[in-house]
Image (cartoon, one colour):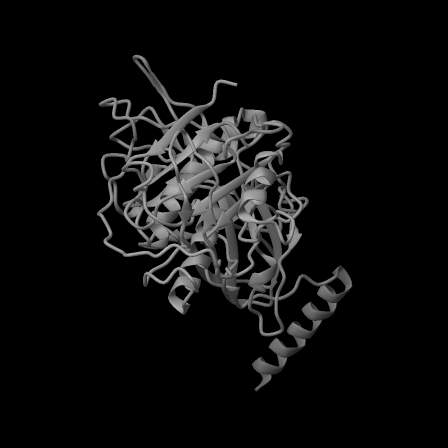
Length: 436
């Protein structure tokens, strides 16, 4: 079937952790992003005793993810990292027909050998093993077969890929995810995003780092703030794919998922507001995605979906923030590893622009604060559009993914009759104040 093998380059320091493999697997926290999705990505942090050879190499008994060298159990720091790696990986695939999970989907009671066979024979399956060193394979952050997730069946462990935290990717959630999510991309048919400027096999956007920095997920993203999908360019003999279009071309992947919020002012969703006037952040979690009608173009705000929310003001200061990233781990707090970069605009009931959110120094929060007279208003959440690097100006980075809204000073949207009553009450209050 023309299977290719891809490894992410090793550009991270070597970690000298001594790890003892064990047949007793520790228990990872149970986390799932989209149960019931067509595709399953199982992040295995608990170790795996591999039978036979993989790409002509012998993995053997690969230990669990560990920070302290004890692969028989997870300590508190390891549990925290596992949750963050899961959340960071989920961010990359949010809004797609993919469930990123730490829960083993194979039948309960199976041995590792039986699980290995089950993975190979289960369509739309990726077994992403995160643990151990690259010593059995060779220097790399991780390694994977390409385009095998959609196959009806595979053999010889092709449905398993590897991330090497001990001396490959590193154990930090940022770098471990950079390798793991990259290898999952290979399983789903993606090749590498190369440098069009110098032909380097793995683009890192010239080592971009710090707030507002980008690098392609299918290059190397060990140092960049955002590791995102990229719409590559063709330069000479180098062709870089549109990552999102390739992902969506997988068999039975189906359309990008709708987050359920209104996408126009006319169909705006009601902003969920708590009794104290704050936004209910657990009910404003959405995602912005490129449109199929544009060929999944990264270019231009209009190439992406938008979400609209309706809210009320009783006449006072309103504060609203669009937060880049999902909020799985702690409600109201953005998970690390955001791929989204929001634009938020505030409109009045007639569609007139009232204000535009200001991006903070981290480029991860976009806030607006101001006085709003009594009435109904709308918040529009949109994509920043494509990010373009001066280093590789012909490539475009997607700004897509999860977000949530927080804020204060809001009122629920009342029914029309209630609006009239409230307006009359406000008028009486104003007259009383003038008399006093």
